[in-house]
Image (tube, rainbow, N blue to C red):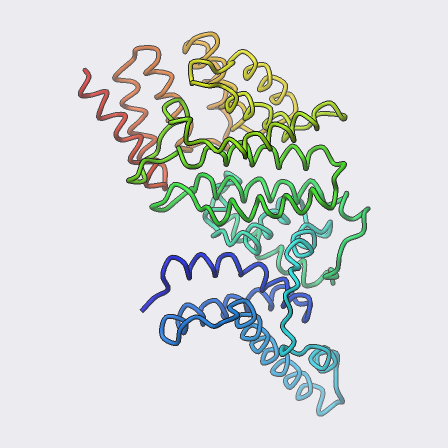
Length: 415
């Protein structure tokens, strides 16, 4: 037997909370992460047979704590043997301080988030480590988000774990200064977590609602901690304005529905109102950052009653400003789409030729997908079919692949 969908969802939701609790008690990040993984495997094996415990979170914390206790005792015994029977060492002291019977409801996930983004790590390593620890993303998914090979990302995560272990990073609520210093990495982590949840990079499902919901929850908490940080408010607004469209993004069969074909009556009006109010209050307050600009773009889309009503000149203007701030090739890709909507597909295709020179996008399915879309708008049916099929072959997302292949098939039929 195996866990049902509810059980799998619960484990993904609880994993970062359990890791934070074990880290608070034992302080060894790498060992705690391994112990939590073992507790999750134990749950997936035992719960279908024995039934789900009344307190799943407490069960996982206790199992992971026992694993940590065994590890500490084994390491302590080894060190005593090597030192020929010396007295208690630091491992013994740490074990004496940590019991696992007093499971409480304290959620230290946000503390863990800021700890993983410690300055002892490079920004890219901190973000990758946090996506693994808090987001539960696979190495392949994180590599996809960073546009690097999976082997490169595996090495980066391994080095980051060792850096946290050797640097003695304290597991404690960061000071206001520490929060400010780590904020950029924290926001990038939350942004990538949300994106992976909203548009999953691989697998049979288009989205992972649990991951995007957790990203929104954590961003709300960061906003509560730092209410005057405009980029935090901008990121939260961006998430809300994007997530509001979730119900319209797929058919009942799970097929992808592009933005211009969505039933806008299915969009969550209350969430859109919250997001627009947030970004409207934030933009006039100071310097405008990338998350605020992206939220403003999302607001323009959400405020349009129909796809035809979309204010594409305003979106193009916002992407032009965003291009000056960001070296992200995905921003350049979206800028090319906006330019095509305003000035025609030939303009977009010319911009796409420049974007294609970025090595980070080499082999990425979205480059072919956008080119196919613009070629279709330009009337080049054969070229559009060729690039739709190339994009379908390159994506690991089943709904994306099906959508792209279907677009190619329809163009063939129409021809």
